[in-house]
Amino acid sequence: MVTFGTFEKITLNFPEITIEPHFEKISFRIKKKIFATYDEKHNRVTVKLSEIDQDNFSSLSDSIYPVNNKWGKQGWTFIELSQVNPELLSKVLTAGYCEVAPKKLSALIKESKN
Image 1 (cartoon, rainbow, N blue to C red):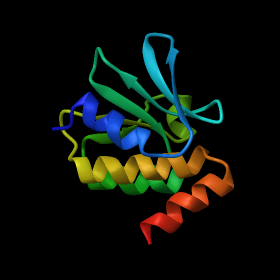
Image 2 (cartoon, rainbow, N blue to C red):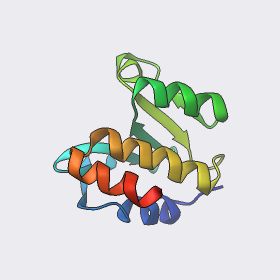
Image 3 (cartoon, helix red, strand yellow):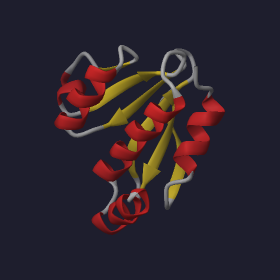
Image 4 (cartoon, rainbow, N blue to C red):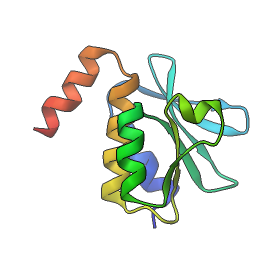
């Protein structure tokens, strides 16, 4: 199980992250673009992934699955924090950050993982 604090700590390690309200959720943004949101009521994260990453991560765990509407077809993916392990969450958030971040920032993250 992952807490909000763990999710937030992982997310804030990425360069140039800002936190802003987004309706009833908390959004995590890079250059004003949302790459993840946290829904406190459901203890669930939504992250923007590529279609390939969405398919790959969804196949690894029942705690990761596409949003059920048109947003899901655009790569938006739910992560159930009460069911996901921290290592997998970190990998999913990294993929989401790199999907939304400008190429220079995405490259920094990819280089640091090698």
